[in-house]
Length: 147
Image 1 (spheres, rainbow, N blue to C red):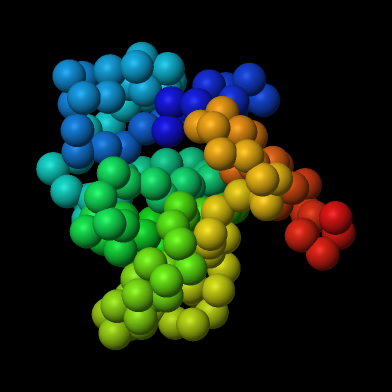
Image 2 (cartoon, helix red, strand yellow):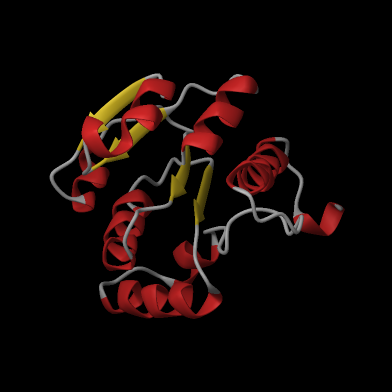
């Protein structure tokens, strides 16, 4: 998360960090972000007012909260980009749960998951670059098919 925040700021993004953890756990990420909004639960994401065409990266610290966070983000129908970290198996399980909650297959298909371009890196900074590259690609109207 902190590596992605730093990379996003380098390319001109204003970064808002939403998290249920506080300074003692994620102080470096909070410090790096332009704005920090503490949450009691990730379900509160849907109530947060962010600019139209915001880019959302769903990367909670727990598999148990991923679906809740993605559901909240999907309610922001003006998002320019929504991506979620996770294995294909985890993503499929979350999608199944969200469909049962009423989200459509079209809404779920719009999520970039697993997030990022397949650049092959494993270090946090390399993963951050792959995520940011996908966000920029989407922002500029390109798709993976254009690569």
